[in-house]
Picture 1 (tube, rainbow, N blue to C red):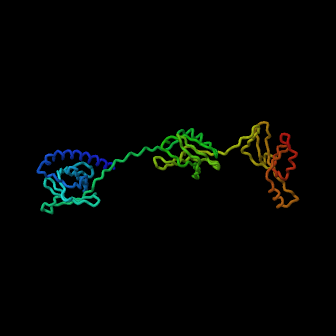
Picture 2 (spheres, helix red, strand yellow):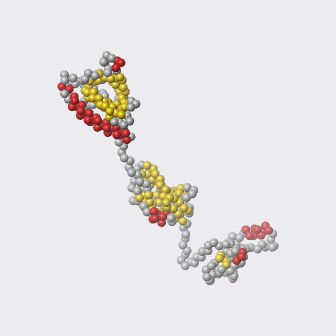
Picture 3 (cartoon, rainbow, N blue to C red):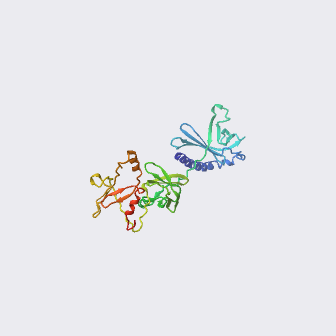
Length: 348
């Protein structure tokens, strides 16, 4: 492409210089014997090219019925020779007769883009005739520069980390963007880390540098990457902002005002009121009970093994505390009548 553009520019420069030169050379010839009163239909007007293994030949036929041939090195495109052929007239739309006396026959293709020129025509020596095929020269337009394309980016990574690191299902999110001027957002998704599953966001838009979207109500808790698909200058693009981890967190309902919430972590399940057997709750804060144990159910000796198994399977869950540090689990349907003996803030 660069060589073609360079050749075009060189050709234009050479054409301008030679056109000026030939106009000067033949201005006096126009007055000779009325030779140029009827110059015929100038069918070859324009520029024509042909190539050999080492050279490129450019034949130029001007509107004023003057012509010349330039020879270029095919590798370097350097101008090697110029043949000023002079002024011509067209006879029978097939013969060029030059004022110098030279005659050349030509034959145009039907589409007018190819021509065969036989040089040395009608000299009485057919063996001296030489025929060459030229193609009409089509100027290669220098391409328009491609518009600079910048990828959509986060305007502030730290701010994005704060926003995307604490997402909630059903919540609307806004993140600042840069290079957004030519961007049209087509889709916003959260891509699950490791499994690479995409979940489309809703209400996605990009305006004034602010990317806004809504996390779906059923969005699972987990870690994701933000994916934005968009078009820029008519081209589809996609960018993954993997430098910032998007974390969808579980919505935690705050406790009612005045309620006391105790949290115990890393506890072992136990089976008796004894440290050696393990415990359900180990409380290390000063002034609190040291052990809260789990209960176990003894088999009823009056029942067989299957009946005892069924009995144990009926237990769901109940918490029951006694005067000691024991902590019991039981079936609230079966022993609900025992609850009347227990009170919470004075209420049964």
